[in-house]
Image (tube, rainbow, N blue to C red; front, top):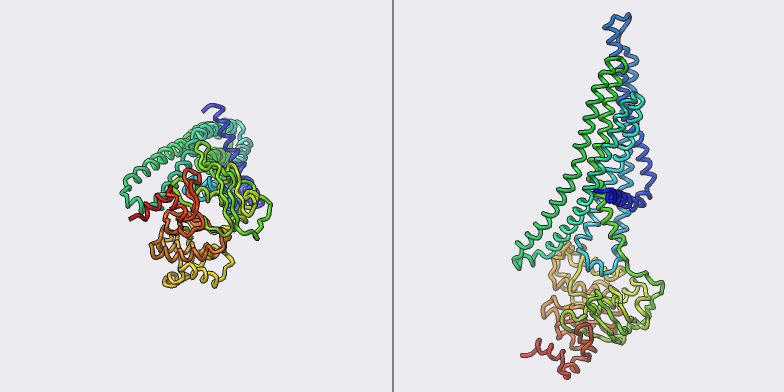
Length: 597
């Protein structure tokens, strides 16, 4: 890696930690308390060889005096006991400091993680629908779970240890200079050399850690999609294809994971080799100085221990390098999400809820990408309380029209008006409260049936919930279930049928009491008998409400006030059921294909 690439990598790491620091800074009192205790722990660690050396020096001096026959020579027990007590107190302070530093840092990091996940959740709620259309749910989930956990582990484990290692290196060098400055020069050479080795290897392995995090996100997305579509995989016998695709992803993950771990793992043995070389040199020359009386045996023992105390933080930093690099990749992935462009700024206008539900599309043009225009110069006006059915082939723009109406996407040109107000001038949350929507793809969450129905109106009473269920012909079916309205729906909603789920979502829409109703293939998942019951409920639900009904079953829209026939983003025919049949056009052919003998 050349110099420019090295500088770029270092700047990237520094930038990553600068992004996450504001979250940790909110708990700087705990952080600084933890760092102060680490400082205390390092001081007691560094003093250990020196204090122990005092005992060895005293004992060796006493033994030599006894061998020489010095009068009244013997072990200086009072001195030795005093030093042992100091050594013991030092140990207590060391352990207490270690416990306290871990406690404060754990508390700070867990609070930081809570704040980060809360911000990610709020960010997700501000992202446009287009972001979720373009990214795998599994990949998004991986950023919220695995990547945030990686960041938390890195800070909880590595921050204290890195601070500990740096301080220990500083104080050990100072003690070595105080004991024997000539030997300390050897370590002054060893430490930068070890640092250069670590830096070089980190620069080489960082790109592999980033790639590893990206491939892991792909794998989680693949697993999530295949588990949700497990029945279809079984149905079409695509197990082998799924296994091969999964094997391709995991092979790639294994390759980049091996490169990241192997290259990063080279740091420890190389640094250990350098430390061993320094130890041999110091032990050899230190022994000679001791024999000549220029160095006490206790100081030699302390000095050799300090060599290992230099090696220990260097090895610690090497062991943490993989975790640190993984955390940098995780931070970058999380803030890629946090930096995504949000929905346009909310208007401060107030929604006029006394409106009657008039909807107008005026010269609307829209495309998901500029190369493929979908809707151009679209005009339609819907009177309050009118029921509009929308039919047409797949890709005609029916669902896109609803997406624009709901402001899941904003128009490229033209405007959409609700009761004369441009919807882009209205706060989204207030504006969407006007709508009730029942989609072909039902969604229920893990909870009781009553909680799922109340999701449409959090202030609804039990009586209102039951009344909405009765109107939509779902009350009887609910009461036949074990637990009735208090029955727990599981996470995948597999303990109720598809038709029953659709009935529940219709009841939920009714409970929200919307001014404008959107039904997107609302009866496509039920049998003919249930379709009749639901259609009756829909008729009651749509009374007095502006309604948009997307349907392929033409039997469900024959009573619509107006039918819009769409193709390639344009209205090619419009009128009621009888008028369109008389025209003998596209709608007539569509009707004939469904109902002709």
